[in-house]
Length: 502
Image 1 (cartoon, rainbow, N blue to C red):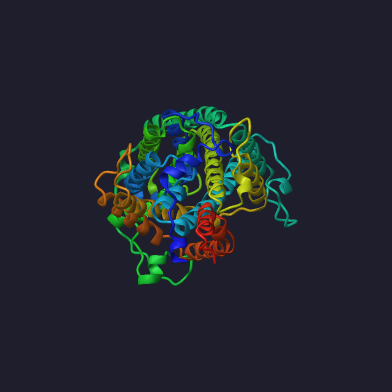
Image 2 (image 1 turned 90 degrees about the vertical axis):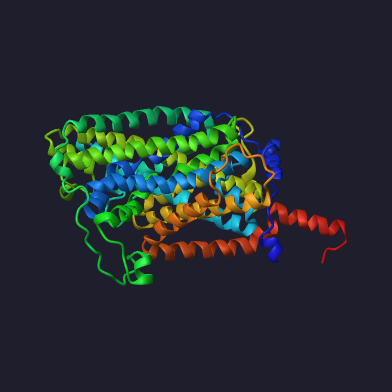
């Protein structure tokens, strides 16, 4: 049984599986498309919201350095992702990588984790997008009935029709084809990046140097507590990181890390890339560098426009412009946020469907979902199924507290990928690697340690919910996936052929 749990899928076989006509995806993406996807999924609520929260409560104007720290943590993981994606250009991202190095059961765990991360992330983003659209409609004097906005507290019933419609429309676009998705994403990303650049350039004229004093506010220790809402590291060791001061910069990094979630989704599109060995690493690293630069610039501008202690935690950019006597910028920023969340939702949904597709092609989920559309060559069955389910969830649920599950799921994937790089370097040194992670094992080990540190700063209740989801995954694996996987069926066939079938 131990051997069965850790049987690995041959990398060459994984690549051959992608060439089977009924399972083949159309290769239509370039390095530019992947970079646009990366920028599209990274720039979302983080750049519009988290800057104010982290600056006001944790780091002060030094929040710009927190974005640098979070970017470095992601860069360490990105270097590991880039090596795997260029070596194993197969849909599924961290799931596929771990199947090739750690074995079937670890691969199932990470795949199950990604299903939760990306599905929940899509629903949360859709609800956030709906909130911005409602705000724009309210400002224009147009109001949807409360029961169609998910905000009807009187009757206790509400369905967020806008959030559900967004998911369904994006589902249809993804079914039609990746190239159409890439074109839509390119246009939308161009619009939201333009809005961000306008904010940076226009805001620079309203910077007051006095707002940067002090750049790193005096350290303030956080009192210990026993609530499940406290960081796990606080409950484990009776100690919590300090707010402000130098340690506040690192504490804030665990908050603004939310803003970087999604760059790993680029790796899920490797199988649909024309030259994945070259273009996937460029897409991952290029999008991360662009977004880090934009985040740092926004943080510097917004903390220079308004004193960090006065920043809004809900809409810091919009309120900063209101404080300068230019409230019309608030509408522009809300428009940019809504546009930004559209692409975030699309690309998370794309990543979700590709992971589900890869797991079904391997037999860990029903093979019914592993067939591509005869015309569009997209995994339409899992895309439609997940789109409908997520639309329903987004329509009925706010998911505000569950959003942190997206973060812990991403960090868990980072840890697995970093470990997998080290293992595969030892077990398969002969593999051609178009991109090689530098300084192995130093970089992967640093990636593991940095990711674990941020995970420990998440609330204990987030860890509890994550454990429950993983427990459900164990049940599904042992009741279905372990006996239905391709590798299990191949082992069974081999035993029958040798007359050694019990």
